[in-house]
Length: 185
Image (tube, rainbow, N blue to C red; front, side, top):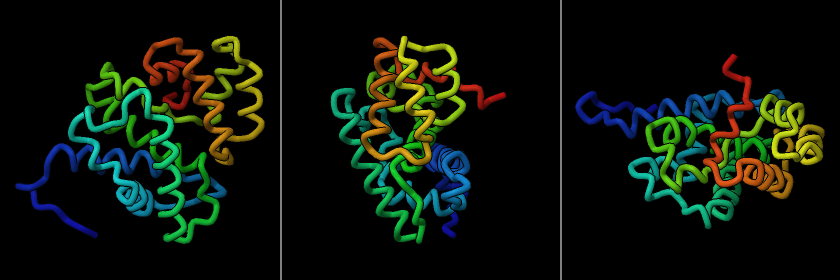
């Protein structure tokens, strides 16, 4: 394990460690169990830490979906190097999205256009509430996603949910859909 001296420990490293811990804990599931260090190594292999210095380094709203897909593919490749066989698109997306939630969205950049377009973490608690409250009038979309289970999403299924979130948010920052997430309780 790499240690950093207190004199060279900076806020970017601090955000990275905290966000990698939170993301790893959130994305690890019964069918795809991994520890925090493995999640951190996957995040580093994708190159996400290098984007934390400035929101301008993040993909633009126009390019976020394509870039997110690339990140997920790279995360799945890195996961196979750690012998994680069930690490699919849904798990990769959750790891990436929780990481950015902690490191960028909740770090005071929530209104920056590139941050506002980042994908929110998708899980069963969010999907259940979106379904129950028919958020955006998209009950059928949420019902389908709930039945599929976020941890088993492929790229297309995941994108359908993100498209639904984007439609339901109607121009608002995508992180605001988490008003429907009960995981903090």
